[in-house]
Length: 305
Image 1 (cartoon, one colour):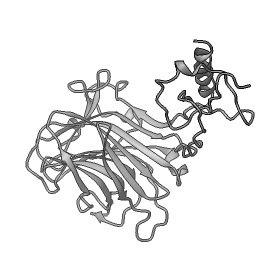
Image 2 (spheres, one colour):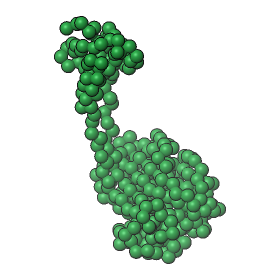
Image 3 (cartoon, one colour):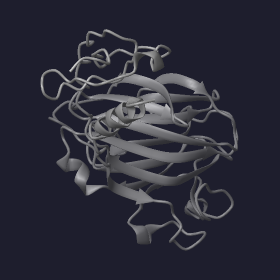
Image 4 (cartoon, rainbow, N blue to C red):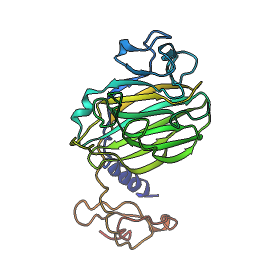
């Protein structure tokens, strides 16, 4: 076959040097609840129980349901009382122009009648300190692009802004089944103030606006992550594998394809413009079945120099 195999090997070898190394993400916070004492709220892990829902005794590290290893966080609300667990993530305040991602596995125990609010479970990046809407002089905080599981049996995305009671319900995404784990991913672009949502790694929502500020506040940013057990009686919720990370930078666009090389034969392999004109000796009878891709070598007849 003369030089055919040598030519193909050379082209594949040279193409291999064009690969780029993919940048890695940076984890800001990660918790799978496996290190905490069972049946107690994980205050030792710096989680704060902001509201106790159906009672402090119902907010605890559980072994009944989990995704990774052996434990998860169990939260339970009441008809007009949520439970909420908050964890500060200090580096969020240092990423005003970055895309930040929140992921978690969520399981709702059952679909029950709506309470004072349709939310059964919700997770979001959160600012603990700022919200103009208060109740009994108690600040509710502000959510950014949250995802909720509601009593109508649907998952909603882009739950934003005001307090949990009167905040926007967001955009309906898809139905959910009780006693089923769902992996939720929320990407927040703090520069453009838009979010996107993935459910079980499938894109579900893109281009939902998140608030850049509230009245009297400028460039409001999240301070941590919050998990809710919603407004319903007998509504257990489990969370596992909560993670906040900064994704790798978006890669630069690929360069435009090189122009197609002129060919005098039918052997087509990637064009390598190394020294102006790149001449190869090829037995053309062995190359007549090659299908041309977008770019190719210029093939010189066998007796050329």
